[in-house]
Figure 1 (cartoon, rainbow, N blue to C red):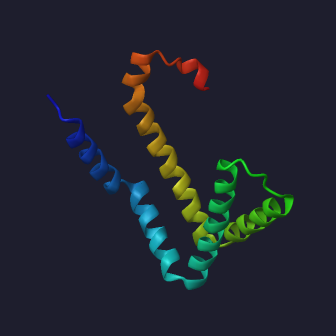
Figure 2: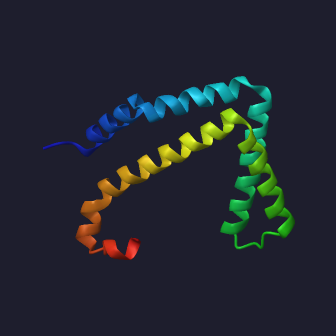
Figure 3: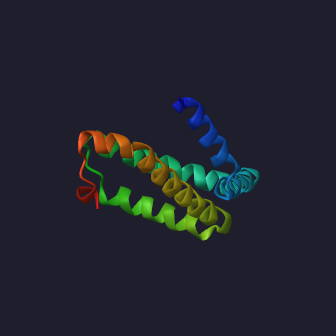
Length: 119
């Protein structure tokens, strides 16, 4: 009988060897080597995290905060490498989400989660 942990480790190695991961890793390196790009991305992620924390705590997010976050987003999107990095992060997130869906299908079947409700 297969050990799920061994299969998960095998999947992690496959993921790490994938083109998506390689591109993501290369773009991370490029951003980290560029002091301005790294600072821009760090600032954007800090603002993003603060807004998410406020939302999770049920706090109201002001219009100024929304506009500031939008400006930060537009700024980082203008940086070519950061923009590519964010695109690759989105691809990787989608891939991991699809893998998670495949992995959890047996549980959904067991507990009768209706696939139609998710769409």
